[in-house]
Image 1 (cartoon, one colour):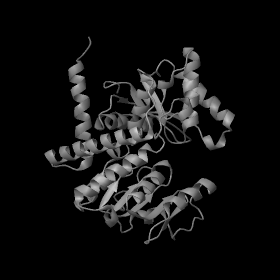
Image 2: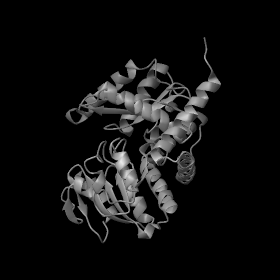
Image 3: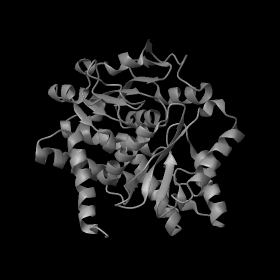
Image 4: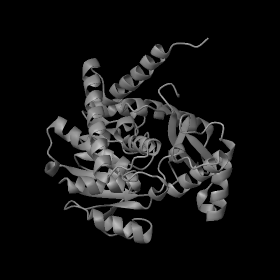
Length: 354
């Protein structure tokens, strides 16, 4: 949808990308942008390719050809891409440059998540993980937990999970388990999060980290902890394992980590779920900040960005919680009610152009 503003969403590369997946993710983005009340609609893009099999030159050619094919759709006022699965700052830079070459002048606001040297925003790379931390703290407060009382398990140690783990650790929480695609580690005394980040930076994964006892990704989900952050991929918490989840609070750093059949099981057991369209909206929020800075010629400090992000994420959490309380529903349904209502009101006010 572009009813609330330019379409906004990530571009993903992967061998299994398909049209139905991209359509579903675009719908999610529509509601996500509405939940945090930023002036964007929702979109998503994808290329079915295995980027690991390509050289840098080949990856650049794929990116530029993809961009050239969408020149009639892309634009600061119409559709603004961002990084997603297997895409990064460099790929966003190629998109910006390709669009700019056809426009015959530099158009930084056509894409977000760019390198800072190309008009990217400070804090964008860490924004999703920081947003997860903000809403996790708000959920703790709502349920009467203090950070020092909370053990945290994080599934997925990429850009979202590692940042969320580090920031929650800094807030006083005890991160007792982390994992990535190679498996995970549990340490009841606490994981050395910065050490894990440094290890991954040097070795490419957590394999061999040795910061605790080895566990699988599936075992991590069922650990005894207060906060569980699934920040890896979709469909991790299902009807098959939901009744074994021991966490008091789940903060969904990934898109769709909990299946529809798992939701009622978690709800019946009193697990407080902060849904993905709220919990991981920090990335698109700072993408909005980047778009604003590009269009206005501003350059905000990191402190400015983080302060604005914390305010929007906190206000959005409170609005979702108030909606959930008003209708007597879960936080997930509360988020959808809030987001869909905002889109519907916009449609009604715009009317129909015959």
